[in-house]
Length: 69
Image (cartoon, rainbow, N blue to C red; front, top):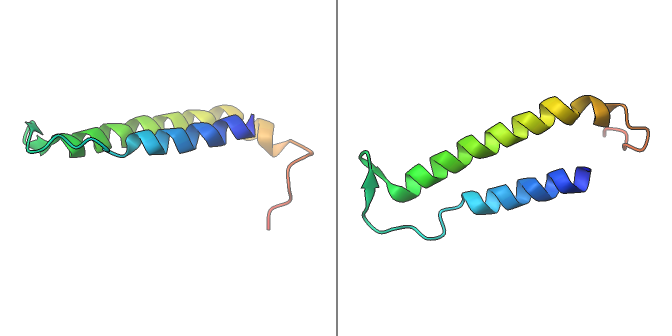
């Protein structure tokens, strides 16, 4: 499960980067690439907060977890 969550975070971060910036177009006075990055940040933070809220206790009680350094 930890690997899946880590992989999900990496994929979301890669998708959040506006690779295909669309020139000078704007949405509500904001460049398209900035709106895309802002929307990606909102989606990313929502998914991370969901994962933390749902899985925090499960991973905290995991006997296989490494001790914090």
